[in-house]
Structure formats: C-alpha cells, structure tokens
Image (cartoon, rainbow, N blue to C red; front, side, top):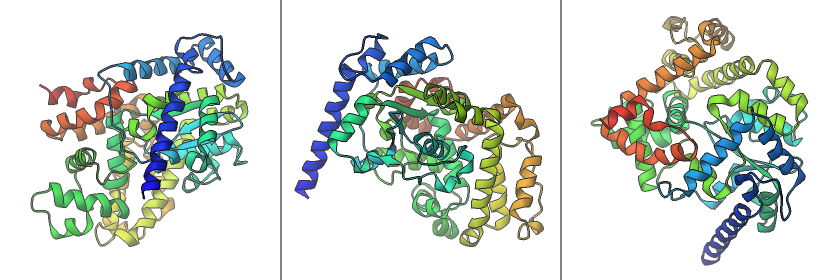
Length: 418
C-alpha cells in the first residue's frame, strides 16, 4: 500500500512538472501569439496555430483558449481536483498520427466524438462516425494514458495538440439528469436514485425507496451538491469539467463547445486536414445526428422494459423518452405523445421511430430547436429552491469562468440572488 501511494505521488509530481514545462516553453508561444518556436516545436502544431490565426472562422479557438488561460491565472478561479489518477488517465484518447489528444467527458458529445476519433486516428475504416454503433464508442482499440509510461506521457503532451469539448455547466447537469435518472436506467436508479430519494425526500414511498425511479430534479441537484461537498457517490456524467480534464494544468489548444458542435467539429477536421471526412459530415450533420439519436435511444428504451417494468410501466417509460427528446429540441416542444396506453405493449421500435420523425417538424428550425431546449432547461432550474441554487452556483462557477460561460445571466441564477 505504501509503495502504491508513493507511485501515485511520483506520477502526479511528474505530470505537474511536465505541464509547467509545456506552459513555459512550447505553448508559451501560443499564448503570446509568437511564431518563433523553440525546443521540440512540431511542424503540425506550428501549422495549426498559423491556420487558426489566419482563418477568422478558426479564431474562436484562440479566443476560448485565452479566456481559459486568463481565468486560470485569476485569483478568483481555484479548484481542488478529486478525480483519481486512474480515472484521469482514461479520459485522454491519443492519435499519434496527427499528434492530437482528446479529453473525453460524458454528456458533452463524447459518444459521437469517440466514434469520430476512431476514424481520425485510423483505428476504424468507416467513413462516417454514424456508421459506428454508439455502443462501440469505447471500442476501436483507442490508445489512452492508462498504459503509458511517464516518459511517453511527457512526449505525447509536449508534441500534441490538446483538444476538449465543453458545455454550459447547467445544461450539462440537466442533460445528465434527463438521460440517467428521468429516463429508465436501472443502474443509475440503483446507485443514485434510491440514495437521493432516501436522503432528500421526506417520507418517501416504499416503491420509491425500492426503485429510485422517480427522483425529482431538485432532489438530483441536492444529490449532486452532496456528492461534491463530501466527495462521495460521484459519477463521471455529472462531475465538474475542471475535474475531468484539468484545464488549468493541461491548457488545451483547441476548445470546442457543445452549443456549436457541428461548426466546431468541422473546424477541427479542417485543422487536421481531414478533408474527405469533413465533407462527409458537412452534408447532413444535423439530420444524421438526430437519426443516430432516435435509433440508439429507442433501442435502449425497448431493451429496458423487462428490467424496469416493476418500477415504471411500459407506457410511462415510453412517454418519458418522448419527453427527453422534446427537452433536447430533437422534436417539437408541442408534439404530444401519439400513442394510447392500450398500445404500449404492442408498440414496436420501428413505429416509435416513425412517430418521432413525424414529430420533428418545427424543430428542424435551429432557432426553434434551441428555444425548446432553453425552455425546458429554464423550467427545470426555476423549480429548484433559491438556497439550493446558490449552493449549486458555488460549485459550477469555476467551470463557467474557465470556459467563458456567463452563468450569472441565467434567469434562475439572477432570481436566486435577488
């Protein structure tokens, strides 16, 4: 045990030393926008940085990086990392061919980007990430930091472009709740739902304590605050982004955002000179993403009935998934669930997907789709008591500052502090 502790300490000391050297050396040139490279400056990195400076469509990446660096340098931004070494290592996916590193985070497009990364790195011969099943996102023999030696980690960090995708912290938390607690998910009901109901609900029913299937959003937020405050029962789908990928230590070169996923993804492919893959995705990015989600989530839905029917009826299960699609702006906010309870047990996946496609209509308009998402998000957080929101804000504001989200302007936060 003592040897294990010493090894962990040595690893973190090594990693922090490496990052400091990178910050002072190689990547100092990016911060100061200089073109004179020192040490082991790589031609690909140099070309990429010049490309970002020359192309106004890519300048946003430099601006986001500067925001991150400024926030990390500020006395107002501080955090205590709680993630273990082993967990941290698994987040980093490596493409040695393009000298490109991606730090993957749950609930920020990681299922899509892990599949895309398989194609970028050459571990998959598919021509589109949508041709790879979502369930295979963690496959493809992708290389991570998990098995690398200290020297190899140093080499990779020093010579690679580091990439991350971020998201409004409040939207990410709400998405995690809808996906893992509101929708049928036996594993999360068992590990978080039951705990949340028993801990934060006054006189929960026996079925709620047994199943954990009806955790409210406020109870979920209380669970999250508790898990972060006590460092217990934490889950990767909800952890703060800073603890996932350590931005103030790693100092990412390219920061994409979930809010502009399609545009940012295409820009990254442009930086990597992946022209063919870029052109393939550009044709129908939004439509393919929607189709991919419909098929994957419906498959999960229909596969959950046998496991969850003692806690949630098939009909209620189907309706919850429909609501989740509405909350994501994938179908119209006004699309009523088109099936009667008497049809629930005979309803097929194909018929469910067909109904989803018919419900798209207005949500094809990007502005309306965004508005639908914002409406659901605002309604959820406005239902949370003000004192709870104030405690939540303390936890999330570090991510807001580092990644340039004006979280103070959210209506529910303004309301909580007035």
